Picture 1 (cartoon, rainbow over the protein chains, first blue to last red):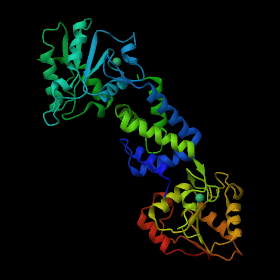
Picture 2 (cartoon, protein in one colour; picture 1 turned 90 degrees about the vertical axis):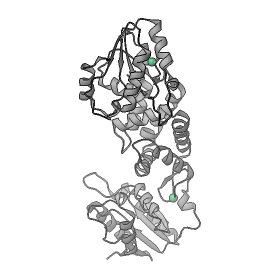
Picture 3 (spheres, helix red, strand yellow; picture 1 turned 45 degrees about the horizontal axis):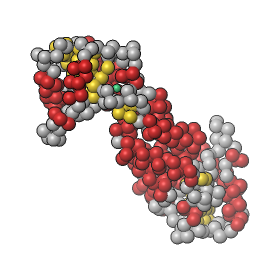
Picture 4 (cartoon, helix red, strand yellow; picture 1 turned 120 degrees about the vertical axis):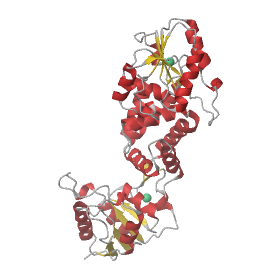
Length: 198
Length: 198
Ligand SMILES: [Zn+2]
Ligand SMILES: [Zn+2]
């Protein structure tokens, strides 16, 4: 019914998480009707982000600068590092504004099922950061899933011998819970009660 | 936490209907992580639509051509016209594939509350289309709301004297229901049972 261009736009929006075909159609109609206040601003924002999108070569965050805004911020605690599985987890912790240090994004979690091996995660780069020195504490903030905990144990082993305080988020996280879905209160409690790796 | 460019993009997405701040953040993360398969296709689709976006000068539909794909389609029944309040209603009817004719978008509904007067709707253009001839039937498919029904009555008065069959959607529509929210079955029933304006 609509032109091919509008169909393609509807499909591109429908593939975003949280939007289905129906809400994508509503969104497209909104964009068409509010060209100057909705369509053009969204287009310009996407252009700018696409132009500048970069993966931080220090921590693995995605941002429009490399190093990312967090790594480049001199007010962040340089001595404390929080290790997360995914960029989404970094953003979840960052939204809570609870962690004053910097991050390290592993890029996944060990998984026999999904065939994710240690060399698929940025563990070597984490060790390089620690070897470079200046870091006192590493918080392992992997998910409270079996795979997340396996990953934490693996990293704890690899980091043995470094003169750091190695902690992980307290088991206040609901079992099977993924960081990105937790409310701020739960995250806050888990972070406050973080404890040394056994 | 994120760069200004990413914040602006998140806000632009959060303003779309059906997306809130939380789902907008998820959508942005998805776009950043899937640059080639999500961000770039969405960007290109928006560019193309923005470049070609046009309001059909015949029926008031929004499309990437003028006349729109519906008005330009020779297989559509040229003798039958369906009058709707908004482009969203046209799209809802079009999805049901039940109406073989063409459309006329009023651009709203009469509303004392919102200060919408007859001259704010494209009624004169509707009359011009009828005066030009070739149209046998007009289906008034305004919403089953008080304002929609008032609008239908007003248009029916204005169209008196034209040699047309004037119908409106059957009262199978739920009271207060808006076309764009109805399932296809309800729309089909209402369209099948359409009856002449008293
Ligand atoms: Zn960084
Ligand atoms: Zn048209």
